[in-house]
Amino acid sequence: MLPTIDPTTTKSWKKLSNYFTSIGKQSLNQLFESDNNRAQKFSLQWQNLFVDYSKTHIDEQTMRLLIELARECHLAEAIEQMFRGEKINQTQKRAVLHFALRNLGDDPVFLDGRDVMPEIRTVRNQMKIFSTQVRNGDWKGYTGKPIRNIVNIGIGGSDLGPAMVCRGLQFYGHERLRVFFVSNVDGGHIYETLRHLNAEETLFLIVSKSFTTQETLANAKTARQWFINQGGKAEDISKHFVAISTNTPAAMEFGIDPENIFHFWDYVGGRFSLWSAVGLSIALQIGYESYEELLKGAEAMDHHFRETPFENNLPILLALLSIWYTNFFDCATEAILPYDQYLERFPAYLQQTIMESNGKSIDRSGLPVSYKTSPVIWGEPGTNGQHSFYQLIHQGTQMIPCIFMAAAKPLTPLSEHHQLLLSNFFAQPEALMKGKTAEEVRAEMLSKGFNEEEINKLLPFRVFRGNIPSISLLYQQLTPYNLGAITALFEHRTFVQGIIWNIFSFDQWGVELGKSLANNIIPELAHDDPIQTHDGSTRQLIHKVKQMRKS
Ligand code: G6Q
Image (tube, rainbow, N blue to C red; front, top):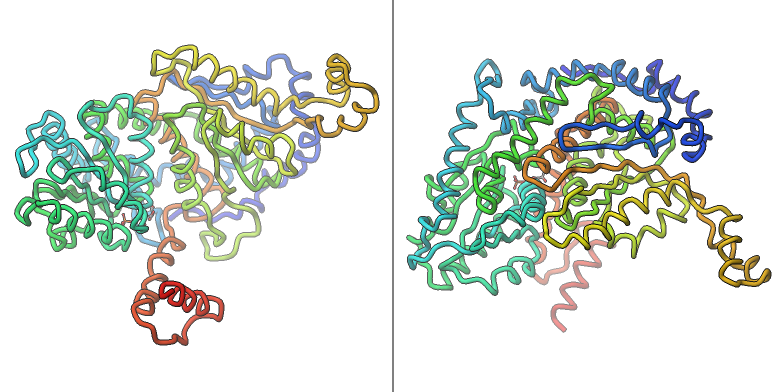
């Protein structure tokens, strides 16, 4: 059982609150002025990753107290409970073993006294054989042609992780294969995806842990019908449809050949499942060996997380900094800003990992929490974001801690582009921290020939208060290994925050609610009779749709 401790009752929380009133008032510029060694002190190199967190409002004492907080909340014990296979997802009575999926060594991982590694290795092998056959063209469609198009049908955890990685690693993709992701129940998604594809060269991956999710089943049925309409026969379905699920009977009932079902298990949460057969699209796109590199990077991060003292432990440090800003500076959001177009889907992926895990307000003893939990996570790649929402980060009314990410070496040969990209990656965090004073603005305007009257009028708008914190995460290059490590880093960061906030990070009752709500309305849309259910507004909207459809 995870310990239940209200973090605000700990000694360290109180000390942090007191300390906040002194350090919280110091600007980042002042912190740098008072310590020449600050950048070196508050940065960390681990393998190919370098994290600089010196542009945050901390000093040695803050870090000591935050680490004390983690200790008082029994973080070390909680980490061991997860890695020992205890059922830390208590509200669903499940263990949390996504780390076992990337355990490539010989060590066993026990669940109720049983080693789960043999079943994991069996499915890995099945993925290896299948992805190799598809990639080398031995797996043929019903007219004897090799597969060209792979369509992953799944939503939430069965979409965001593999979609983020496939987009991220497209540089390493097979030249014949194109991977598409269909998630939304809105027919526009599957319609627009399929209309340029031909059935004889298309492989569908139906990904659903439960195999009961409305959106996925609707899209899967539409895909099957499209396949038949295009000339495929029922007996050809096994060449074009595979399933990834924990629910083998439901996948079989849908018509998937049992040979084409890739199994995974309840001990893998949906949003942590890209390391299981849910990542089949990744193995197909980049090849099984490279897919294992992704797992290796994550496995290395697992070891780092489990074995490194808190003071040098990347997921723990990043989690504590996020708590510092959320709970002491009262920041409501965090921006994730990859200066890497390949990581276009990384912010969306992290939104789910973080907000679905830690967007909770009931603590582990079932009582409402009295403090903030997960901030809102959002973001877009730089430099695009600079031309849109950065305005608010620079001059809006809220303090928004940012995480900047970039590769030291580009994947493409377009090195000039990379120089431009990196110059922005350096310039933005610096500008956010330093700001621009009225004196600086005045001098700049004078040098540009503005007169006194114009300067006095325009000056306030051109001042930047600065003092906006950021963390910079550099990786050597966007390789499968490095992406695996970065992704696992954020998974563990999320876990640490959940432990300190005393909430259950691995359930998702809000998502479950969404799954049942719409079902009640489906029958009401099928007829024209007036309905009496729902509130007045919902009733009105349903009637309006029926009317609008008629005209
Ligand atoms: C993830 C969530 C949720 C889930 C989807 C799809 O942690 O539980 O996003 O992944 O609702 O569920 P299925 O995989 O069961 O279709």
